[in-house]
Amino acid sequence: MRHLTPAFALGALRRGKQIEQFLGAIEIDGRPGLRWIALGPRPTGVTIYLSDVEDVGTDTFHDITEFPPLDPDEETWGREVAVLPTPEEALHLAEHELAADPERWVNQGIVCDEYQDFRTTRTSNP
Image 1 (cartoon, rainbow, N blue to C red):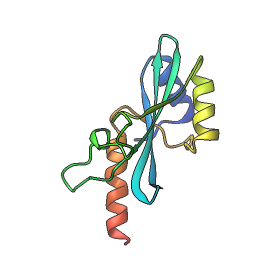
Image 2 (image 1 turned 90 degrees about the vertical axis):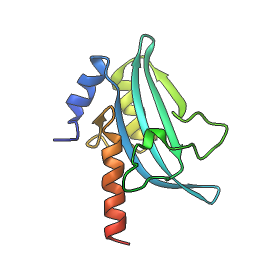
Image 3 (image 1 turned 180 degrees about the vertical axis):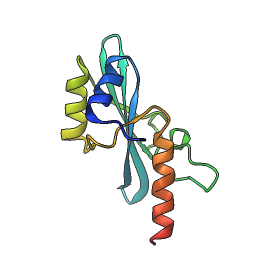
């Protein structure tokens, strides 16, 4: 099972583990790209990062975390959206204001597999 249940996503954050989610295709200023989100526990709370990247993936390169940002002034890893004191608050903001799906969180690094599935679906259903 790739996706974390809501309880497991919360548990991962409480144990200090990062969780991620592929949010899909986007367009910013007429430029197509991809969006993904990461929630990373820190000593001060849980940081929410949102990444808007160019879709430079290929059949053999699908590490979305290495894709260049759509905005050249943005860090590759994305922009910090918020730091919230608890995992519950971070999940709530991500799911209610940033369109994250509570049933689609994955452990760190698995977002690349989510992107690969997206590519496969997109090329199978043009």
